[in-house]
Image (cartoon, rainbow over all chains, first blue to last red; front, top):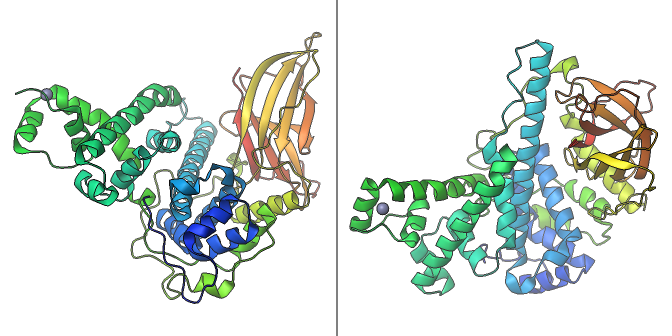
Length: 199
Length: 264
Ligand SMILES: [Zn+2]
């Protein structure tokens, strides 16, 4: 819903994108190869935007396709195109990589502090934004449609509620109230579980 | 004037302009502004450029598929020329490479004082190695961590999930069980492909990751290690699994694949 399927590259034979999505969900191996041909550059481009070109971006790209394949039971073709789902998986992998780096940073800072016999200032603080992202992306996964598609257009495509109504064909009031309820749900998740996470 | 509607507060949190009346009220009302600020935290966390809808496509390097094929066991392969043609070949770097991230690793390796910070250059190789082993049937599938049944002669006193580090697919669970005679055993349940070289070893680390106690070799599945008497788990609460080369060096290799913090 949030990501328009790119047209298949010129000269690429094979079924259309929707059919690739259905065959992917059905576990047909050729569909993974087709998905890679069509959307690996898009996924890798996202990872490069987050980490710059190099091993981190490449690791994330690999993880996205491996997780998407092993977790294909979680993909519902009727809920949206496969590239949009891959984009969502990529968001998780990017956020996970941030969180891992944060853990490593804290471990390293603690080690250095100990070696320098620095006065104990307690463990280095958790980067709460990093933890918030992992938590909230998980909560997004729990949303049904059209709530999820609406909030993704607001967050990730930077559309106004008017533009979202035009794009989805839903009434303006419906879009506004879905946005409100989803934001409140995510806020509650942060304030309840986020607080425990950072404690 | 009454408070803003919840719908308008949501739009304000997203940065959308409000009608003049509403905007004027918001400017003056601490209650409404407070509510916007709470919602805004959600928006600030998620509506960031790095997570936005895909921007410029960047063709992945040719070798990337091999790791995916190895990890999934899928025999079908994408056509290299089609992949290469799927993004402008001349421009592998997007216009804007953002500042590196909320939580980058320190630029300088911390040297001997931080022996278990994983080494960057080994990362992709590790993923490939672990993935290849999965295909060979040596490992347990990702996400398929089945809890082993354990003997009933013991009381669990601490446990943790072992989270994969640095692109490894290793994960699992660790639990400390106290037996009737007062001895304690650490059970490590590892789901991972066998490394192509070397072996996995379990360690207990202190929270600063600077002090460590070697426990022994771990294979995929469940292993038990008797803990030294008098060992303070509060002091060494981190369970770490590393890949060790067969080089006879008893020190930690610096390549950790999974780690967890025991909740005592
Ligand atoms: Zn008010």
